[in-house]
Each structure stands twice: as structure tokens, then as C-alpha cells.
Amino acid sequence: MINMRHAAKALGIVLSVLILQGCSSAELAIDFYKKHKRSSQNNSGVVATPHYKIGNPYKEFGVWYYPKRDLTYDETGIASWYGEETAILGRPTANGEVFDPKIATAAHKTLPLPSVVRVTNLDNGKSLVVRVNDRGPFAKGRIIDLSHEGARILGFVKQGTARVRVQVLAEQSLRLEKLAKAGQFPSIGGASVEAMPKIEAAAKPSVNLTAKSNTGRSGYSSDNGQSALELLLQSQVGEVITVAPVSTQIWVQVGAFHSESSATSVLSQLANVGNGEVSAVSKGGQTLHRVRLGPVQNVSAADKLLDGVVKTGFSGARIIVD
Image 1 (cartoon, rainbow, N blue to C red):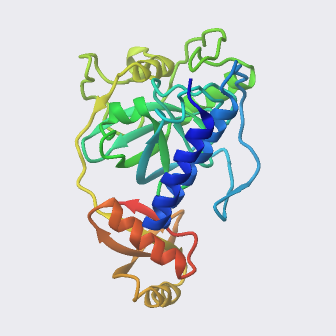
Image 2 (cartoon, one colour):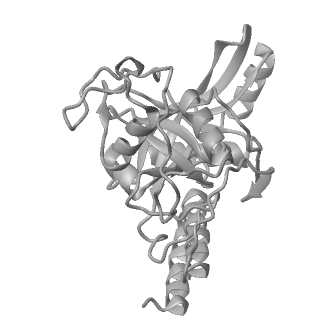
């Protein structure tokens, strides 16, 4: 049995060292410590109480997050993973399931719990469907946390991070929402509930899913009668679909402005932080002028650049890959 006092002391030492290394490392350590603390507080007889949850706005590390039901979510950025350390004794996820690092699940800051997302590792083309059932990550510059199993399947356990695209699968998410509100959850992560009925999905994700999976079966298609839940469960036990890798660059996006002059002014304010550009993009029939710094070639450089932007006063800046 683990001595929690000794574990807390060790965590404190690790935290102190990482704080000296910089803000991003410190936030990662604090995020780890909070999850470990939740695990320690629930180390005996954890009972799963799964429920559907969106949640109220909340604040972490000085940043407000606003959970919402977003069926169009499609973002690129940096993924991290969590699991082995924080799940030593088991703990409840943010929606009452019991976290299991051996099952491919994910944590997201704002999406409903549960939601279904496709996470594609842009560097190696591995693409995986996972259920989002927890909150996080709260370190700046990370858009999603995968469980250890999810990171293993997507091939970035050793690296710790990966450039990813995260897409909500709207049809699957809506159906899981309906079932979750009725108290029906898959029997995973310690939750002993009835098996979910078959879900007929009506739409394909936008990534190329005609490729062969690593088990030799064809990829997801609504034409062959395969249910979204079947694909989801296959992913949980190691099913991965491989698409073409994408060559990307990492940027820090400061913001998007209707006025080009405003965007140019912001870029000039950040001249001492790093080089960047103002580029025009079309969104919702409107032209926006986005301010981005970069590109940089690795995550550590992006973290450093993001810290500089945030310290200048642009707290809404984020890392994207393009």
C-alpha cells in the first residue's frame, strides 16, 4: 500500500523543481498534483455514479472556462496524456465514471461529458475515436488529455505530447447524450451498467476513414451498418485507423480581429516576443484577421512563445498547428 504522506512529499519536491523550470512545467505539475490528490481522496471503495454533465463556468490557474454543447468543435493543437500515476488507486472522473488508464478515454476543458471525439495524430496519421469523460488539461497550450491507453494507441506515450486534430463526432455525441441522460453508460472504467444499445450513425467523420485499420478490418462507414458504438469500443481495445500523416507547423494564435489595423497593432505590440504574421481568414461569411506568432518546430519552443504572449497581456492566446 502506498504511503500517501510520502507520496505527497515526493510530489511537492517534483512540483518545486518544475516550478523553477518555468510556468508551463509548473502548471503541468500542478495539474498532475490535483488529479493525484483526487485519486488519494477516493482510494477506497470508489463507486461509479456516471451522469451527463456540461457544467457551469469554472476557473483554473486564473483562466475561466465555459463548458458548452458544441457539435461543430474542430480544433488543432497539442495533446498530452495522463493516467498511470493518477489511477494507481482509481478515482472518479468529472462525470462520475471511474478512471481507468487502460481504456482509451479523454479529458477536455469544455465539451459535454460524455462526448465522442476523433483524435488524429497529425505526425503519424493514427486516428482514434474516444469518449470524453473528464475535465482538463489545464496547462496552457494543451487542448486534450488522453488516457495512457489513448496515447499508446496514437503513438505518443514516450514523447508526452503530439500535434493533433480533435473533432467532435456530432451524430455519435448526440446519441450518447440521449442515452447518458437516461442513465445508460457503457460498462467501462468500473461502471456496472447495462450495455448500451446499438447506435446507427448517419455521418462519416471528415478524415479519410476508407483506410484499413490495424486489425485488417475496413474503417468506419455508415454504409456497412457498423454502429458508432462498435467503432468506439473497437478503439477502446486498440482499434486504430491510419490516415495520411500531415506536415504541420506550430503557431501561437493571439486572436482574430475584424479590423486589419487592429490586428497589425497587436502584432507590433508583440514584436519583442517573437516574429509573426497577420493573415485573413473567412469565417461565417466574414473576413477576420488573425494574429499568429511563429512558426516554431517543437512544443517546448511553442510553450515558451505562448508564455511570452500571455505575460504581455493576451491571456486568450493558444497553440495551434497548421
